[in-house]
Length: 399
Image (cartoon, rainbow, N blue to C red; front, side, top):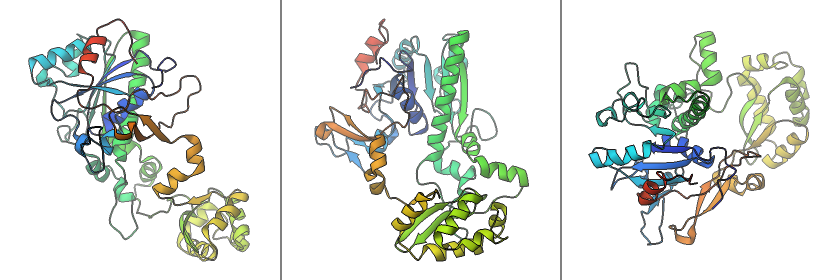
């Protein structure tokens, strides 16, 4: 396993009371940056996603349901302890850890931890340096605060599904739990900011972050387009609301992406495609004109691209600086030489897995002085209970 010595968050201790994806993705990111993350799970059950399969990764004991690939995606660089916080013994054990914790992350329903004396209001005076991050579907306030929130529901309620899919088709969710993942990203950023404040002032704080708030925030240009015009945008399939041509087209042997971002690129495309006259046509000479005449221009572009194979177009257009690319499936992605050179596929040693190795997605951060580290594979339920209770009360700073 890699050392934590050069990690940015060495010495930061995180209690992770979250489950599913938003919270665990945030704490995995903190763990990759060097934090010591303790995953607190329910006895016998653990994180719900342990059973979210198939596929499952077999353990050395041959059990077909050892751990789900879903669970493995967001739980490396953590240690697991099973505590029943509904019992006095479980709460006492958690308080032993809280004495030494810098951060607590939880995604219980609003008020769910208050009955156990573990909400921020009841902990802040006892642990004034604690950064306490609450992740919920709808936030700690507002008329929906007590509702349970799930990624699929949030994608629908937060507007992204109204923008995704073909114009005459069914609204579509994004193919991964992107509302959860982006909430986890925002949570990690908020935690880092709060730690910086705590280091300057000595005071922790409460972070209230919700899936719905995060989903709306990452509507970015689509959201501000609406606020500017007060007109809900329609679905454009793979088209872009503000740039044309910027979508998937069919070459002679399959789909490709043409992503023309400015007038100069459009002119170079037209010259390469043998339709130079389009760049001088007033209907297409500027991006605003191309947006106004989207349908007829895209038809002309499609007719040109259909004449040659995809690879020929990619080579020719890349040579003249026109952004373009293939539509890859995941086999294509992980066999791409650039992806391989960047190390996106992480082969992580794992004592409990058959073959002694797990195939995971690497962290994309490339820090020159404090690189991410991969120290621990995703833990089995309660794997580190005695170790955690021992070393968090010691003077050392485990990695």
